[in-house]
Image (cartoon, rainbow, N blue to C red; front, side):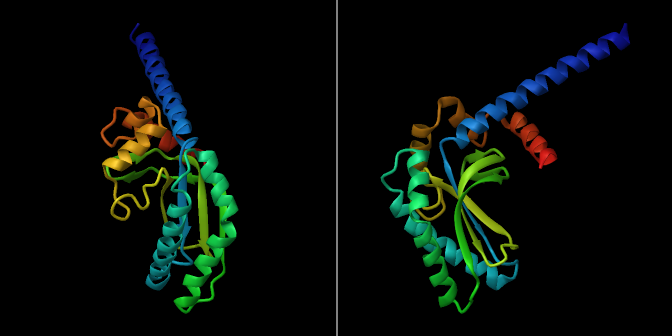
Length: 202
């Protein structure tokens, strides 16, 4: 009887975990369908290359914040990015050359795997997101990322979230999705399991 109850309990627990993962996956997908990420990869982990990465980030980020100021959807954001890829590469190349390097640079719109990342009080679950991806040189150094639409990269003071950030996010996401990304939201366990499953599947 005890063995039977143990099997039943394990099955019930497994079902709860599965439902939690399914719910987390659905929320992550819903969130990813409404935001655009920004991803910059440095040539290497040397201090010089990492400093160069941040200069490229600032130049491209400032430029794209202006280009995306009037967009109202992920689709519009993607279109703007695609239409400005050559300008983005040129801006990055200018920074690289001004700093005395000759690294090549590529800019593209890609569906990328992102780890769980917190910006202020908002935590975005790990998973695949559309992103403007800028690769400097070999692209083998530590990378940097943020949310480009709605803009969390240059919101208020640089790279900090504020009241306006919350308003932008709540306008784009459903109530459940918005609650899910709040740092103290009640989806943390499900997202941790989803994060683990994404690592297993990579």
